[in-house]
Image (tube, rainbow, N blue to C red; front, side, top):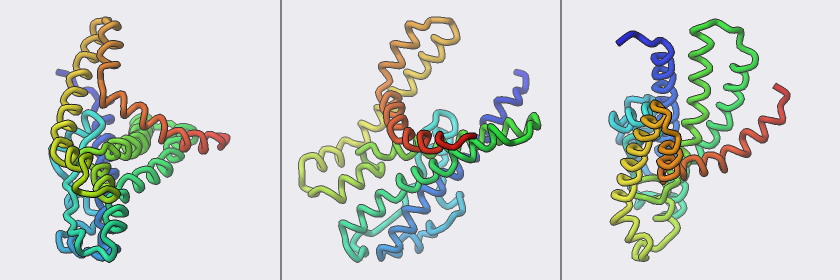
Amino acid sequence: MSFNPNRFIELLASFLAVTVVLTLHEFSHAFVAYKCGDPTPKWAKRLSLNPLRHFDIVGLICFTLVGFGWAKPVPIDPNNFKKYRLGLGLTASAGVITNFISAFVFYPLWMVVLHYLPYVMVLSEFLEALTNCLFVYSLSFCVFNLLPFFPLDGFRIVEATSKRHGKVYQFLRKYGYYILLFLIIESFICNIFVNFGQSYGNYAMVTWMDNFNILGWFMKFGTGILGYPITALWGLVPW
């Protein structure tokens, strides 16, 4: 197999972008929990911008290769919060808010690279791929974590805003992980068939499997909705 420099650049940019996005996401959870009165993240050494403190190797590989994944959950003790529900809600939503803000910041960086960086073959390709991945991954991680399935942030938000003995909460707590796992596996299988169809020109298969990809459909819909104000606002700038 011959060395493909373009593929290497894409994977390196993807890996570095994942490192930044996951670190910011998990650090924000730890920081907000600490500020709400819980010292647990600090004791667990998660109140840090060191990526090694936050990585889950399987989640990192998944994020690098397929565009969504996970990090090690930040340990918290909600009983330490000064205000239980408020602290739990702020801590749960801190990651997705941070990812949305970072997507808002990374998008213009991508535009600057595209329009103003002098072309230097390898460097330009790398920086274009890196800034694009930083924007796309920030947005996709924000949307992915809004899913209300344990152990994602969306479930923690449900936990903070609902009664724990409620039927919705109990269902999501008991079955959410398995639903999430099913969606990830189903999406992965659909992508295999899509790539197969593209390789052999079977566009009927591509269309059908793409429509059947439940998680993929949600991600496209969610990133389209949340990404619109970012691209619309920065689109007012005459690049």
